[in-house]
Image (cartoon, rainbow, N blue to C red; front, side, top):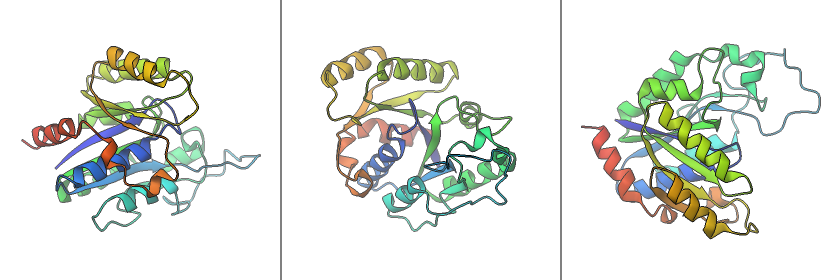
Length: 242
C-alpha cells in the first residue's frame, strides 16, 4: 500500500544492505514488507565491452546478488521476477543500447502489483539519485512521478561529505520528502568516523535512521538492529496509507 525509495551517494555504498536492514527492522514490527529493484546491473564488465550488442530479453541473468539479497531479506514468498523487472549483464546498461528495452510502464505495473499485495515496498535504485533509467527517465524523475519519500544511504568513506550533501540537496530540489539517511561504514579503517557522522547530522535536513557497521558478509546477517530510528519509518508507513 505504500513505498519508499532507497538511493545512495554512489554505487557500492550499501543500498542493498540498507534495504535489507530496513526490511528486517519493519518485519520485526509485524509489517508485511518486500524489496523491489527495478533495474539490476552486472557486477563486472569484460575488458572489451560491445556497447552495441543489445540484450535480447528482460533478464540477461537471474543471479544478481542485489536482487537475491532482497529476495532473501523478506519473510514473504517472492520470486526473482517478483522483486526485479530487468537484470543486465552490462554494468552500465543505461549507457548502451540495452536501455532501449527498459519499459517504464512495465516497471510501474510491477511496482503496483507489489504495493497492492504488501503493506510496504522498499524500492532500491541503481547507482545514484540522478542516474538515468533509459533515454527518457531518470530515477529522480520516476520517483517524483510516484511521490515516494526517499532514504539516502551514505557510504562513509573519503569524499562522502560532498556526495551526501549534494545528493540530499538534489532530492529536496525534486520536491520529495527526504525520509532520513543511513550511514553505512564501508571503510573500517577510516579515521574521523564520528566527526563525519556529526557533521552530516548537522548538515542534512533529515534524521539519521541508523548506522550499519562494517560486518562480514552483511547480506547474510541480521541487520535490522542497526536501524535505530525505526519509529520514523513506521510513522511514515502509517501516514502514506491514510
